[in-house]
Image (cartoon, rainbow, N blue to C red; front, side, top):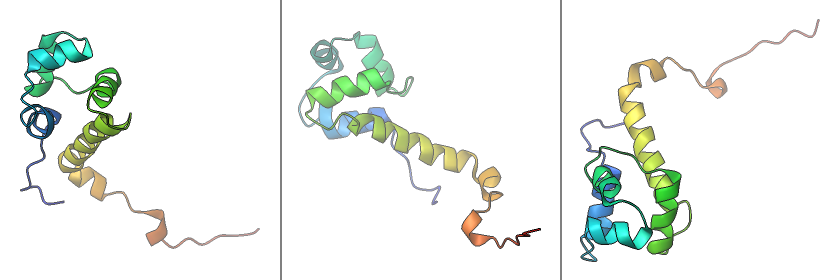
Amino acid sequence: MDTATEIPTIGEVLLNEFLNPLSISATLLSKEIGVDVALIQDILLDKRKLSPDIALRLSILFEKPDNYFISIQNDIDIKNLRIKKAKELSQIKPLAKRTFSFSLS
């Protein structure tokens, strides 16, 4: 993976793809989905990840599939983990690339 590529946070995705284009503030978003504005601000500032509850609320509001936002959060987490644990993960060898010898005795 190219570590020079910046991985966006879920807050950046929300701001750039949904809130800014629709002129929706954190306050309005929090009211629309029935949560505290501080929670939304924490997500936008990358102080908190999306929970399944918030992800589902966002999916309903923006008329996306139920798993839409949680899938984005998971993709971000996995990409960051691949970078963070690159050395450790490189030690794992896929089974398909190994040769096994079996004994029937």
